[in-house]
Length: 194
Ligand SMILES: [Zn+2]
Image 1 (tube, rainbow, N blue to C red):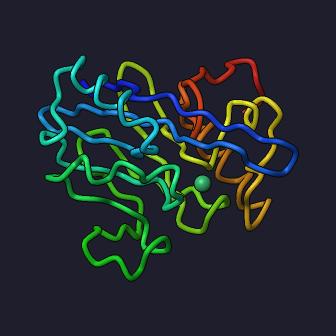
Image 2 (cartoon, rainbow, N blue to C red; image 1 turned 60 degrees about the horizontal axis):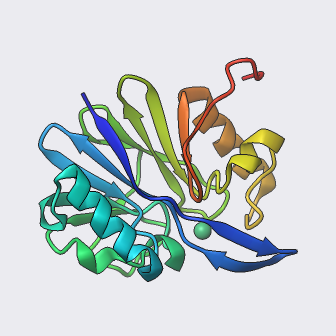
């Protein structure tokens, strides 16, 4: 069975329309003997990530796949920690970065671990859908904060509100538990209209 662990809980502090501080949440998926990290957060979160991987008994060199939900700096700050990993990024995010595996369609990277295109925040934003004892979606900034779900509002940074809201819907249609781009995982409200 796939297992999820949160390596670091990121935060997002806004002052009006200005973002004062942003560190993404970083998640580890263990699928059989394949270790997958989704988003590597920022240098400020490096101590937390190092502590977490030690606690779960996974060395950074044992991580074979890193998925970047998109290429904003606050999601990619510790890429160099995972020196043995292949990096998966949507093709829209970094067409010139040849060392990355450029993802186009939705694709399964391990049993029950799917990369799903969820644009809106950026054109190449993607989420990771994970089958486990429940269904998890690691949303990146398609759902940057739990508040975006509670209030059903698009990410503050978006290029198309309609597309962004469609992505929120596809994530919440699937998932029982949502890991937002920033903050703690939360449960989808079963009473909420799907
Ligand atoms: Zn972002």
